[in-house]
Length: 280
Image 1 (cartoon, one colour):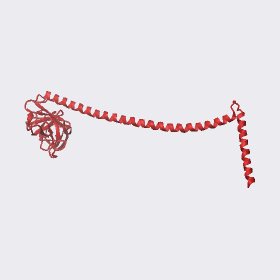
Image 2 (cartoon, one colour; image 1 turned 90 degrees about the horizontal axis):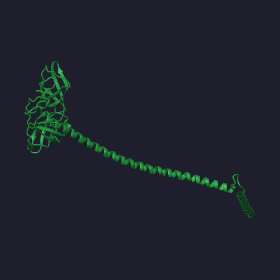
Image 3 (tube, helix red, strand yellow; image 1 turned 90 degrees about the vertical axis):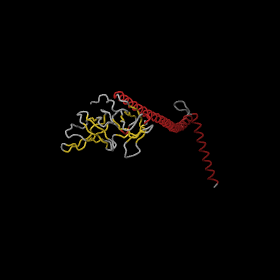
Image 4 (cartoon, one colour; image 1 turned 135 degrees about the vertical axis):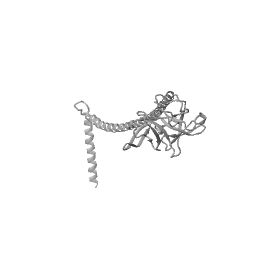
């Protein structure tokens, strides 16, 4: 067993001697460019190691940069979302102010052109009773309001005061089932009575069979009821149903959007005058 071990050691020493000899030769032998072979080989090996390391670190740096950039974009998106939300809120607020200003200008114009004593009021609530179509306004008997005073908006007739208190009043809308108003077709001067249906339309009744009536005709207050001044817009004819020569049903679409009422005028002396442009 001693002889094989000696042989193995001798072989290893011989291999190391050969390698060392080659290294010494490589250190002395130059390449065509004048660089020693040993230096060229060592540089090449180190270059490959550095290139691999550079690729690895470059990839890591790219991932990190992408992550940082992504976080920056997310933060920027959050800022932009907040700014957009603020702009939307500001737009809605300014739009509401503009709409209210337009409504107030319309009411002021109506008040000036009608030459009627009026009191301005703000709608503060709807009716708590489902069977009563009405609203509550912030003016009452302390402001000169009393029962059966007409309530007008810039679009047309709203209804009448039914229950005034000291600082508020209930207004019965034209579409209430118990509401009625004398009407006049602006084009043909045909007259009748409009009654509420409890829904979104009015029913035109007591219309003569020979009356000239078309869909789209504008209907205004006639003044015969003693509550509403003559000449204020009520609405337009939406549907006509006839049975032979008889008008079976006439529906009128109100000019006022009762669901969007904010500001109104209460006529405190309905028999003084008619609105400018109203025909007798």
